[in-house]
Image (tube, rainbow, N blue to C red; front, side, top):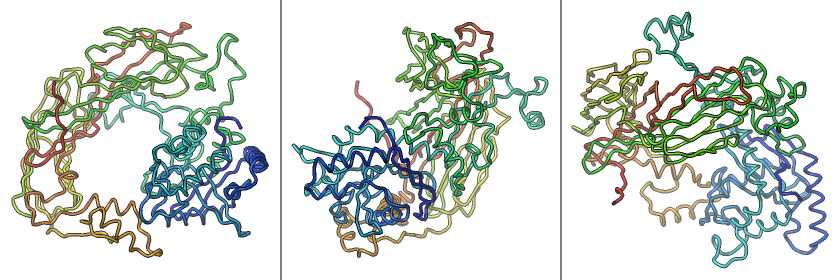
Length: 625
């Protein structure tokens, strides 16, 4: 049997554990039946022979087995480790966390027989559970079945077989994971390409932008705009609209779109191209057989469709800055930058694009990775040449980690102290864009205090800059609003105030054990549960992690790990914070073609946290030099 990945069958379950879509691949099933016959002829005798079936169960049989496993294992994923509740022959008996994602099912056939199915790749996305069954050799299924019945817990020292060694021998499982992830993105609409922005001159902002809609009329408004790929912008069905769905609302399953994707991306069960944009482009425009590339050029796998039309190259540096701000002498602030260069090369044929990266010595890059289409032939202190044969649509050319070349864009402190059990006094003192000059501009900045387990009943306070709004569980301070940003200047902002909460009420989830139970107590509680009242391990762990603190402990009235901080959100345009840059004039295309090159940057906040200076905060010991 070949080592490549082929898929026997796919099932999609709703959140009611019903099969709402299934697809079998007869060509792969024929190979499986042949392999089973060969294995059975070679080894006729043992018990495990009956656990490898040459046929697939029907949807109702599989659904019943999936529900039975879910009830036995405590959740769809299962325990992943052996506990008292685990039974011999179950996934958790193997005592390996990977069994939360690679599961086995004991399926009872309507004729009374029982079959064992493995490896089933489980991927949970939104309200759906996706099962993908790749083809493996029957001996691998038998080997896993024996692992599920071993008396020892986990992989014993000196044991001949283990789950890790078994999985290393099965590269098809990696391919099956990719199939499951691609299907999850298609059925939930989460196949958005990376943003590539049109470079533009600074906007005049304010009312004029809102009237013109930032569409660049007569050059008046020219705010950077994201460019969508034509391969997904002309999607024919509203059900397949990309990235426009609230994940909290169940999305109707577009079975026709899913069937079309599977037929094109993995004909006869063998994955060829799982890129949704590539598949849609080919279906919409056909292959490029009418104008094939020159005979001496090989068309790469990442570009199955050749572009036709007006030519241009768009490059965007998008950086996300994460920070933990403590304002304490004993704990240094932590700032890091995660960046990527997004590209869109609308070029005919199969050209090569190259350019040097500027500012590498100032950027202090700590890690680099590139798209498979890229080559990096030249290295130097201050430049690194990148050459690539661009694929179709928007793609991430390079990812990197860096240290912020400038100071923090938002600097200052946040203090919160409890005056009483239900009343707190807070103070913000912040500096925005200190030391930053044009062309860097901050488009917006918002600070949020969240109190998920306390209800706000009153609030008093007026900031020196911006506006404040409140909800039942949060206070939001909009220092800068979009369209009225800072360009080449810094400001200081203060915000003192008081906040009053509703009286403290301890609310606990129903659980088979106390929130304060030790590990031993948890095991005893689980053991005492009846078979009809199985512990949901995920709810139980969530409850353990989010337990309420007694109100009498006024020194720590909140769960400080979750709530005793403020989060800052902002966007900066004009240049990267790492110092990395691309000169559009240095971009060369071979064969030479007249194609404009546009370059833009944007910096957004990730986890930018202001920890309460007056309370506890998580930190790590500094490295001794």
